Image 1 (tube, rainbow, N blue to C red):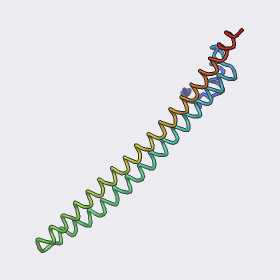
Image 2: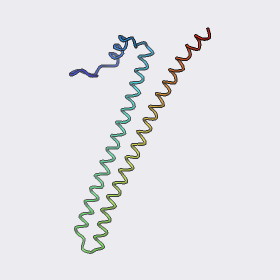
Image 3: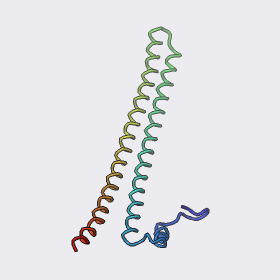
Image 4: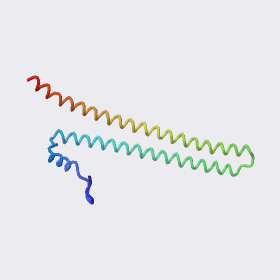
Amino acid sequence: MATKNGPPISLDRMNAVLAWWGLSGTDGAGKLDGQFKRFQVFTSDLQKAYGETYGAQMSAFLGANARIGRSLLELIQCRQPQDVIAAESSVMAAILDEAWLQMKTWLELSQRVQEYCVTMARETADEIRQQAIKAADPERSGKAL
């Protein structure tokens, strides 16, 4: 919706185009504005959640890399069999901790995305329900006459 070198088309210009098509009206423009604002909040919430998840993933990854590096240095310095087993166990513990942190982060992200989607669906359903009620009221009042 953006021109090639210019800024994106504003909501006012889009409303003007819709008015030209005969789809305008203060109620229609308000509905469109509300839908765009709701979608904008939804996408910004998703972007924030993805950014936080990325940060948590990178933090966990860098921490695991440091732990694995230290464990591998311990493995190189081992002189007895029990030291080798302890160093290998340390490497495995670091790998499993990293896997657990990644799963936890993905689980939290999926729960947040689910919450955002449910909220968006509820708001949209409420709006549709209100529109249906408004549409049904004139029909009822017309039948009563």
